Length: 441
Image 1 (cartoon, helix red, strand yellow):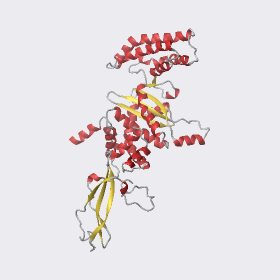
Image 2: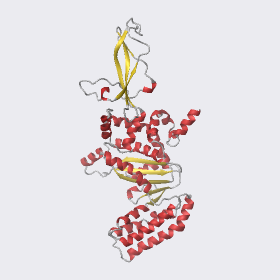
Image 3: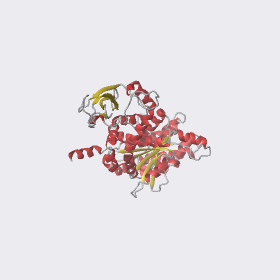
Image 4: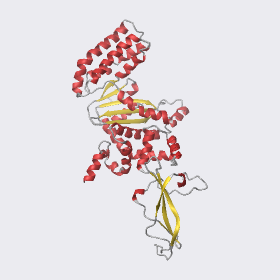
């Protein structure tokens, strides 16, 4: 328990706790205000109290340097009944060894900055604030438990948005890797981090799901929370695993993927690739001019200026294949076939209001779990991966909404009981309004 008292080092060395002498801490002395040596025992058995070995506790707060406080609590003991008497602790000391803001910093460092726990433990030991990586896991798990009601509500809100960006990236889970080795006939062997982004008028929601399910399956799970009948627009790439079983969808594919295919081949097929890239770039220039337009105005603008460009593009693509100027099975032929085979999905922005050109905004969001994968490398279990998904989702949703994630995670821990009852009042973009109303009341 984090509220347990730290004692002097024991000879066995197997308690799992660091003694208070290991910490570079600011010392505080808390005297007993009601008793002094020689006073009668409050238990009224006739004994007298005397000075006893003081109780020592450590409190670690959110500061980066010298962040530990050591409190020596004056203790009196009755020479007859043996009862110990200590003063009432000041409220600011709290009941837990690690305060809420310190735990929030640990979570942000690991699940947003990508700093592995063992590296944080090494740094903290170097400044005489030892927090073992196993302890960090339990602290992060506690923060995730406080964030879970918010995460569940974010899932429901995202499921009822009219546009969702989805994609996934690879993931490593040690327990699954071992299971794959032990079961060579296992059908599902992949591990993925799925990102799902929902953009609202004044804020964004980003959700991460870590596990063995791919993007389409995670999206099907999310859309079970959908309560409206309108079709949902899904922006993704053309991978089949990104397509959900949910039927009421409008599938749109990323034009940026097509652009990058030709960009990669430009040095080998200079003339056709530059011509194709130039036409796609013109469409993006048209889209840049629609920033301040409504969805309807943007659609009409693209129909007027982008449709002729796309028609010209596809005429040229067909010309290259029909005149056999390109080998259909080489890299350029495959890039052209990608554009032709998915023409309907790639040009949805010419027919439907609000459809973006590409999925770049979500691919930028996937850099967060990719950074975690490159630094921390793996999760140990599926449960640990799910905890990471919850915390990364809440933290990056705060970042996208301009909210300080450390302050927000701190607030979630301090108000966990109220959040369970009314999570909608404590969303990142309105929790400060809730506090203002409470203060006014």
